[in-house]
Amino acid sequence: MANLQERRNKDGKLISYSIRVHRGRGADGKQLKPYTTTFDVLPTWKEETARKKAEAFASVFEKECKEGIKADNRQRFDGYCDYVIGLKEQRGAKHSTIVRYKELTSRIYPVIGHIKLCDLRVDHLNDLYTSLSADGLNKKTGGKLSTKTIVEHHRLISTVLEQAFKERLVVFNVARQAELPRVEKKEVNYFQSSQIEAIRNALENEPQKWRMLVHLLLITGARRGEILGLKWDKVDFEKNRIYICNNVLYSADKGIYEDTPKTEKSKRFVTLPKETMQELKEYKKHQANEFFKNGIPINLTGFVFAQIDGTAMHPDSVTDYLKKFSRKYNLPHINAHAFRHTMASMLYFNGVDSVSISKRLGHAQVSTTANIYAHIMEEADQRNADILSDIFLKKA
Image 1 (cartoon, rainbow, N blue to C red):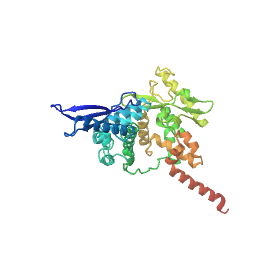
Image 2: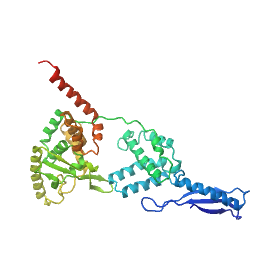
Image 3: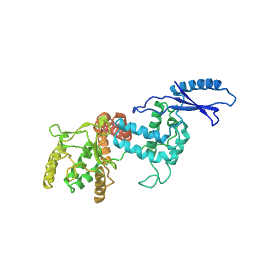
């Protein structure tokens, strides 16, 4: 039942009622702030009349609160967003996701952080997304933010407002009606066969660790952190496969750390060619010798690719190496993810289906694979048409 509290002026005259409606506890178990409102008393009313009118008003107010019609009129966006991010962290969201959320708030809060949830409008969000398109906001380039990054801001805001809707703090998630910039779909970057040959030839002059690492990036199509997270006990030499179930990441607050892969389906067995398994055996011996020379216990951490002390490598060390490598041999720009795209593309060109490719890549859904490689599938289908033409239509 709603709680009514009288408010009187210094002369003892009844001027209003403060009305509070209990909200219970939130998902974190803490007491939620009550719904509040004020009912003003007209000077001509008798106190008995004022009380009855206030009680009738409070009854309607309480009903609207419980039905989600009445919004909380005190919660600011910034404070509630912090609460939602904390809630996500408590519920097991990945640390990298939480770090990214907090990065996004640095641009969101200055614009809409002070606005109460119930006062937030679609035009506020549209103005924010427009402001994010201005020059100078990209800290790395000094230019504009990418459309993808702006959409990331929107998704966080929408997530926060959706939680507010669930908790009946707002009557509608206004982010659903916001106008987002159009995301232009970029074609994936992959290497041609001649480029792969040039890369492999150049690798012959590189240290064995880096030859093996780049080889696995190409053959497995695994993500950078997944390759760095691979340990020897997950290499099955009998069945010619590896089990990807670990991920090495970096954040400023934690440094280099281990986590599970991106999604549950990212945990997967990846079958490798016999040639690759033989190279892994030779590399394992090489690594053991290197550790022995430096007095490092072989089974200290068990990483297939490790720093000189046996601990996990920094993910950016792979990116830095590939940049230097490509410049050294006058090769096209190389990044770890390009090998992932190359593997998928080559499988499509050789008639492998999306389900099999998706499983190898560790995508949560086959539709994700199909969307990313849509233009590759079209190109592969054109090649199929040419093959069919050669078989059935051309005269001998």
